[in-house]
Image (cartoon, rainbow, N blue to C red; front, side, top):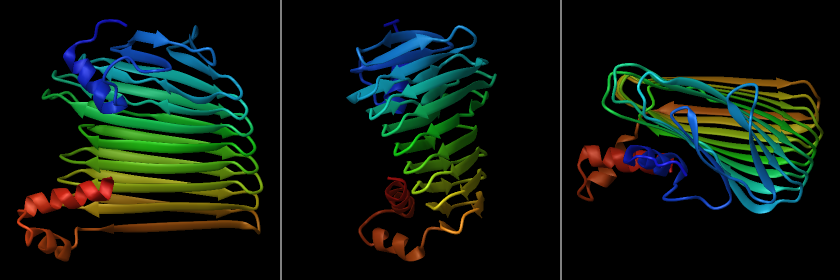
Length: 308
């Protein structure tokens, strides 16, 4: 492994929970270059030859293995776009941990755009964890624009945990998915913005096969003068079930826009959307303050529980 400094190691702990060399396959990227890589008998990682990024190939039947592909940026002014493709074989069951941490102490913007594409063969299952984190006291922004594209074959499944809690000034997260018969997509997004941060989440899911399903749920908190937009569209093109939900807490002068989109193109497409935006209930604060907490401490307790 290339020698990483303490800031880069801290970012890896934040976005990938790495406290050392991970088990299994991994590719660690630091300031625009590969810092470390390992493969296994069942998981191969190859550098692309036509553009920045990697191809990850997971053999059919692979079980109880993981892939870590975190990115860290500590150079102010660095901007990059990386293309990572994942080919998951039939009946494989793996965990993929991604995420990006940016520490910007300079006056220029630092930006990472990760384009992740997944092809899941029949019966494959992936748990995908993507965490974003920003730090640094420079005036330059920390910008992240992830794109995730999914092509899910029959009876495959994908669980996505999308987390952004601190320090990212501007982000546009786009997720597109196409599901065949029996495929299942589960998304859990947790997001908090503060200051003048801006966060946009866009989901577009096509349920094209009989028995396919999608459950997309976002929980978010907008503080200070920050802005959030949650735009989720589910298209039911076959007998299927789809659910999307936005549950948000608004504070200070924050703004939140929820844009539901349901399109049923089949008689047996069952689609549901739920949205709730509101402030912290006064009785919740009073209850915690009677236990000895200050109002600020009570707010933090409620927010932490809400985003857990």
